Length: 314
Image 1 (cartoon, rainbow, N blue to C red):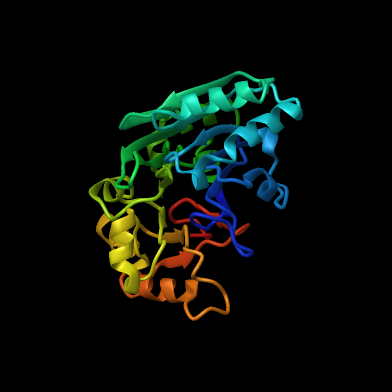
Image 2 (cartoon, rainbow, N blue to C red):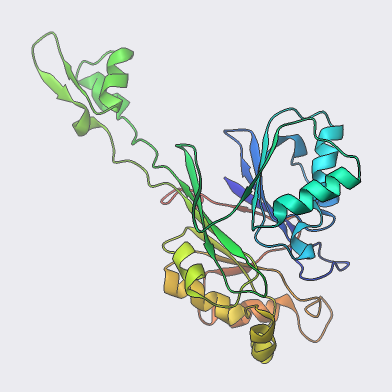
């Protein structure tokens, strides 16, 4: 599980940043999930190793253009590539109308089943392996954040110890791993619970779109392994952030701290924070780290792994 940031700018693109879009790569499933799809997203995808035909779900936080204008073009390109697998799109009320009108007026059909789901707070997806729920955020238009939760992974069987006890690799290993017991020819009983480690907690990822600091963001990020949160402005522009329904980097860090998140990745930077300018993203990161040290800044085409807790990568 890893995130690739396709666009980390706000409002309009710059030479350094595309508009909001982040891809969640699920290699075991050979799937991509997109969170937001600003103008130019499909062009950004072409500059990565990611494969657009693997897109199965798209989650739109809100209907401001810098988060959704790239979606009709992306869907049309998937059709031109001959994609046939279903694509599910999730977003606020009005998204279905946006797509229906745009595709109809452009006389652009889809070669794949397209389902558009308009959001209400609560569960969004649950396929047994991954569950997504959403909560409302605070912005100038209806806006949602998302929480992705992975199911726990079964604990590992101590195969060497099982073999030493006389268990032959095969069906009995499966029984033990499932928590069952195996009776040996001698009559001794080997308990799976004694040979299998506890389940590994599933990973938790929270993605908060445009928002002022709010309880919904804290709720979504509770105990998350990774929180992606907008940081449009620095503290010198806190009043501007509040007026426009955005957060400063320090406010994003405070959300991560209150939520007990493990890592914070900042994104959605105003165009004023550019390399070579008086103010840069490094300044925003410094403001955030003063409150939440485990903070980093997203960059276009940068990839952030989401390892399991306790893994070497963590």
